[in-house]
Length: 180
Image 1 (tube, rainbow, N blue to C red):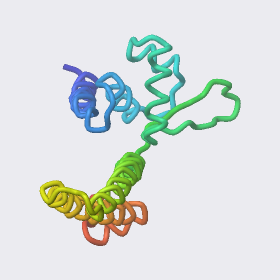
Image 2 (cartoon, one colour):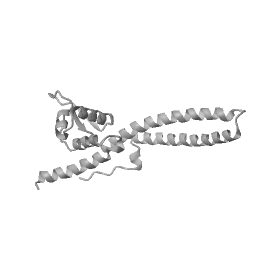
Image 3 (cartoon, helix red, strand yellow):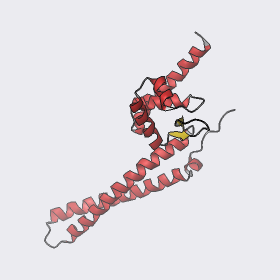
Image 4 (cartoon, helix red, strand yellow):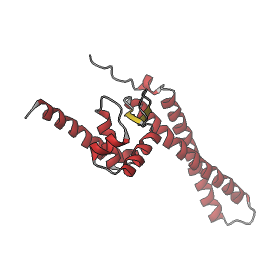
């Protein structure tokens, strides 16, 4: 086995692993394969080059790149004299995780808190009604306690997301220093 073949086997093992675990980011294995392949490229690639490397259709490749751009896992780069778009993998995995996590969780927090606050208001009105049965009032109060707990959780989660965005998280869980 040649040195190049050994290098390719080592790379392919990592690409396979990355591809299989990309469902954590809500993307398909083929998008994960694209990201893994881009990680090992020394230079940015065009859609045509990626298509050739992975044997995917240009439409599929374009959709995959767009998904990775939205997740901030791939960057579009410019090079003088090159008319086609060039793309490279984001090499800062910490920042990729932060970007992905904060994008997804900010949306989830907003949607869930809106629904919870609306339900809290409705439950308060229900509890204050004079002609409500004690059984329903008891259940509504119980639900209100659960929803107030959930609000506290989403407040904590929002502050956790803040700690990621500000990178304060690294004061609590430091990055390992790179070995030279």
